[in-house]
Image (cartoon, rainbow, N blue to C red; front, side):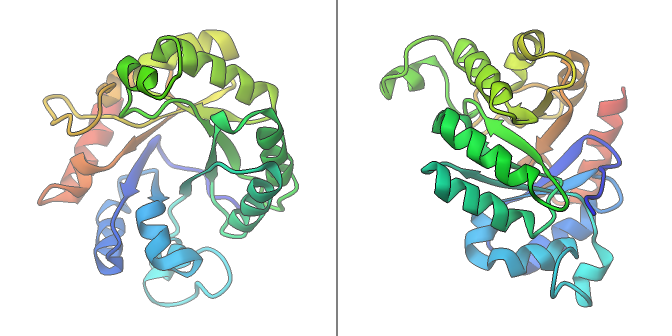
Length: 246
């Protein structure tokens, strides 16, 4: 059964070091609503590594996993032909993620195939479309031949995702309001690029504080380096949860 997050904060566990990953999950277990596992960890450790961190799925009993149980955002951003993505979604669902994602730019057929595969899962996850990565701006889109401002592309991809049966999208905080207006209150908005007040922007170009993002209508916030890149991740996670409630 899919575990519901206790709060909107998903901590990004982006490391290939499984010992480091276990330490981070242990540090944020009592504060974060869930954890996000992406390509860096998954390529290094695969499904067994995910089970070790979450305690969900066959072969997960015992050891560290037994003490985890945080909801999982499986951030693998599938993008391929429809049949391949549908198969990947079915395989991912065996890990019982709370949500997983695909690239919305994969097109209608791919999105519909992914949605159908997710819907057929015994523990159906939220299926989320990735709109425009938060590391990109208008100049970056132009460089790869995509016309129009970032916010217009993000809204268009959100509409497409909704039409194809997805539950929501990943977007930057700057696109929350136009996407909410276009897609309604029930459409889930997952927002990375969140930085605490006064935090370092690193390689993110479209960012916002936790309280601001939630006030604009975000459903879930993804935070990585402001938690995992400091000396006391547990304290950093607690501060972000406090900021969300401010």
